[in-house]
Figure: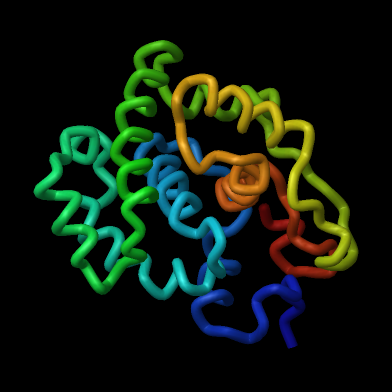
Length: 186
């Protein structure tokens, strides 16, 4: 039997995501934006809910193309609010649009969002050594700093807990349990 992190709960969506993506370092701006969007919509919900709707989000938000999303108008917002395949939260939809604009501003300032965001971990993955899921924190000093700076730049739905989940998803931190087969792989 394969040892995996406890949170997968033998759920096929979780297992696929865990085994192929979670904790793998992401340096592609488009993929980083995708996780920023997904984490925004995950706020207050389970990650499984987001995974199940991920393809619907991809279609609804132009394949997470931040240049297109930054130009969404009220008509597009109404279309998204009426899209039963995604989380229909107007605050989160509007946050995604404004976050796309700020994302582009960060790219212009730093050359890429990747250079900016990975700066919070000195451009290398923080490798933790947690034995159980219960030991894993919801925030860190790095996620606190990231949240504070993103908010200062105008980003929304970027509290420290969301930032820490983003860091886990994009491999900025390796929080696989030490017994998990992915711990050494990522």
